[in-house]
Length: 287
Image 1 (cartoon, rainbow, N blue to C red):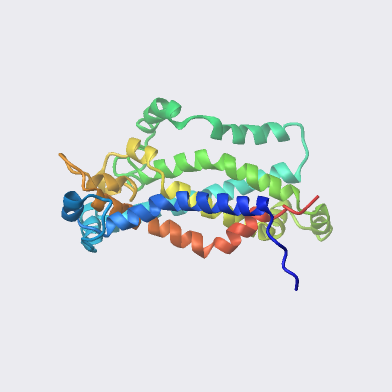
Image 2 (tube, rainbow, N blue to C red):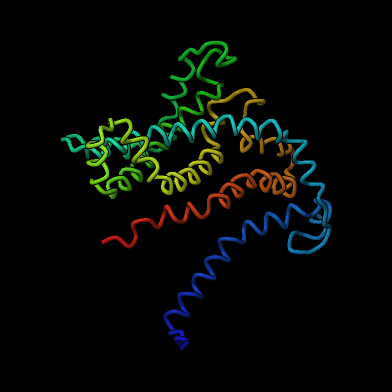
């Protein structure tokens, strides 16, 4: 087999991609390196040095920030929020892609426009709303939507549905119409067309969105800080504040905590990597 000689443009492109990859990976590598060194050594020799290796930062971070409980809190928030977001978004996307009516594009625009609003602009009205909406005692200790898992679940679903509707509706529009016509001939109802015909074909797109949504909702920090007041209910990202001292901050300890927090999202990404890449590249060769 003859090998094609690399062109200067291709070499330049590969060099650019390598530089971008190194720049992108540098903060992660620096955080891991910092987390494996003691504060006493870096304080004496600086961070641009090698030595003082230890795993004590991870043990101390786990105990100080109480990551065990806060990891569970993140699970209580992330899993229902992702499932509810994908279900509701797939329902809306199915209606937009399956039926043709006058307000089709308007409905898609309404859901997509929600992502264009800055979340900080809605802080005051949402905070007042959450402090006035009551919940049963078995759903919230505060008997309010404020300071409850349900509040964070709803706020994440509200802000993430628009993006998922946009992606799924475009994906569902690419599905052959003959599938629905055959299902109608067989007597399938609209629900069966959605659940047994459309959803199995959308697994790659759903897997890609699930990977993104888990990462975004799990890493969400702003609303958890604003809409929570009980420390034991904070998700794991907000618990990183427990690693900050009153007079100084041990950056080695914070780096270790950040690495621990990032591990679940990395595991989920590598587990769904094949479906994630497949979902992003589907339809790229269609003309």
